[in-house]
Length: 289
Image (cartoon, rainbow, N blue to C red; front, side, top):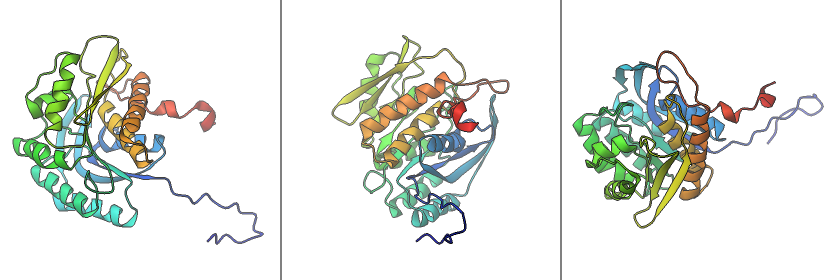
């Protein structure tokens, strides 16, 4: 009930809440990737963003120089806190730095009905490789991600370096995307999205969505830029936002693809290294003057 006094001249506020999305991810002190990219994308896509911070990184455009893991019980408590009070319409993960963190996150998601067997979709972005393809996770964490987290996921979104670390398959052309998708799907997620932006061939970036039976190819323009930091985060979080708004999976992935393509097109240089993809294209100059 609106408690604003009548006759005061005060205008009532719009008190309708938007859908909600939760990112379970690490911070980026440079502001380009991780939970920062997720929150920017959530806002740009019309959902209220919430966080469960898994790690605090020391990084800039040149790379990551240090990382402090948040205690697993604290990560789980963040998930329980927001889910039990605010509610979660969709969730995604970013970096899950240890097997203990993965197990705590999965237990909290199970309690809150988040995941392929629950009421809330879970997008698992397996952040397992750095921008130059080097492993980011210890062997036990990689195994827990593959063997315990993937079967709980509604969608997993590996890039080609992560496919190699997870399956041993080295994708060198588009014809191998099908093999990669089948191999990842065998780990148990409901859907797999193979991101092939690292393939240098052709004027398009062609990703592949696979449900275990049929594959959908998702072409998009390729832009000449080195500034792609946070592209994977933006793609996965745009899909998560669409799922939070009630879109079916294929529609959500297509919306995410269009969002990240535009964000890469508007990427900008920052610092001395790799700049971020940009969501500023969603904010017109007319809307901020």
